[in-house]
Amino acid sequence: MKKFHQILPILAVAAGLLPVSNAVGNEINLVTGTVDNGVAATTHGSFGSGTSPGGSGTIYELIDTIPAGTGVFQPFLSYQKKGTEEGVNTSLGGNGQGFLDDKRVPQWTHDLHLNELGTITRSGVSYYAFELDANETGVGNPNRTLSIDDIRIYTKGTDPFANIANDSQIHAALADGQTTLGTLRYAQNVPGGTAANWVLIDASRRTEGSTSGSGSSDMLVLVPTSLFAGAGANDYVVFYTINGAAHGAGDFSDAGFEEWRALTGAPSVPDGGSTLLLLGSVFASLGLFARGRKTASIA
Image (cartoon, rainbow, N blue to C red):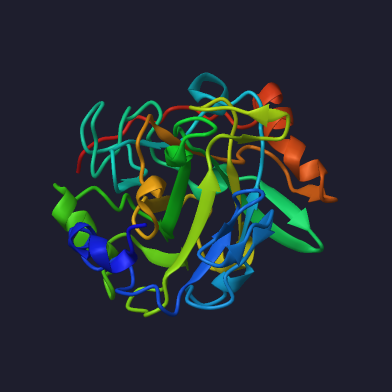
């Protein structure tokens, strides 16, 4: 198994976005029935430390929306690269291939605004919901797993990418102390920190059996709305993620597009537990995950 320190040259490209060691890190293992790196599998979890302030309240959990796939899923972020991959949602960066490893710009990688997000209420806490459909190889293949090594969410009143011309400028904006992308609302790994927090998922997992590719979704991330205090209703929401960096060789990206969507256009939804697992398919059938495409202009 390839250790984290062996892939530091890859991560250096990301301008220090991840901690330099996983020795004091934490893993949430969502691969059912496994023990990985000494961590037993679970169905949900939060990181107690190493996140941005208040980020310990963010929940990562299994979800199995069926069917998934682009036509049903309506993603706001699509990205793809073998090995370590990273993506950020913006309608800019050029049609088709955008910044970083983004694909399908602006149709399935595009701007998102705070007033487009619906919320889920669980145990009295309000969350924004972001759902991942990972596209990896199938059951029985060691490459079916994927590590989610960082998620950053920012808000800004004006387009954060209006004056960004290349990937290097994005990496600089993501680096510690930069505010180009706006106010940092959530970081799975706090900028400049020493702990490495990552999530391990199995893209072939399905409650009825197994799947591969984009047959069903894989993970739901619930971010407390309280972390967005002071943000404007029309603020841009910047969602950045890097995958396949901090774990074993089988946990790198090796297949098709990874896709993220958000719960959008819906009022607050009370959740009693199992109901949450049905939200994706229910809202998809109602069209509540869909959003109108925005026409972006370069400033």
